[in-house]
Image (cartoon, rainbow, N blue to C red; front, side, top):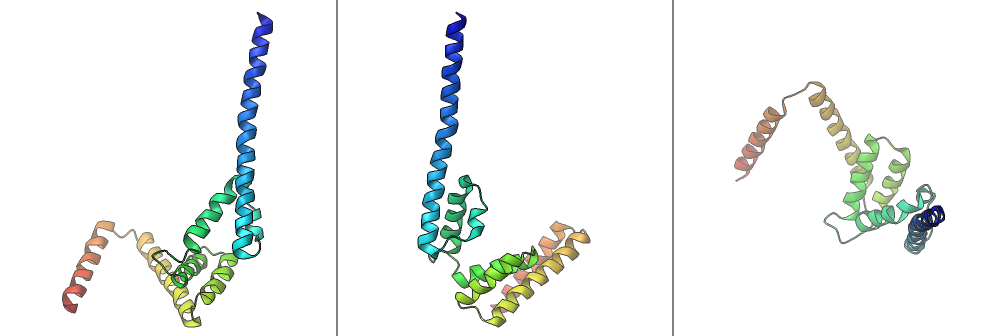
Length: 157
């Protein structure tokens, strides 16, 4: 009886080990495929992708390729990159600032548009700090904002 319990335990452990090994290989294959696609799309695999664990590479690449690099989204490339630069300026992230500045220019952004995107980020950050720090009542703010836009709309008609 003891021998059959041991045999069952070994079988269960072997099956468990198989389940932990198989997904890892599947993830490795997915990472390998993603690296091949990155290479084909960009001409190189930037080190930033190599900082990720294999299980995250395909998802990260799909996100970038599906939104940022996709020309068939609601936002054009220039707008996406100016937004990326504005956010990067606020984080702040020197890597992202460098990348999104060059990407915005590659997508047709002028130096003036780049400056304006950064200025907008600064303005939003400033007022966010003021409103949050002053604990302005959100319901009152929303009503005043709704009234302001209703007045602007009425004036334009």
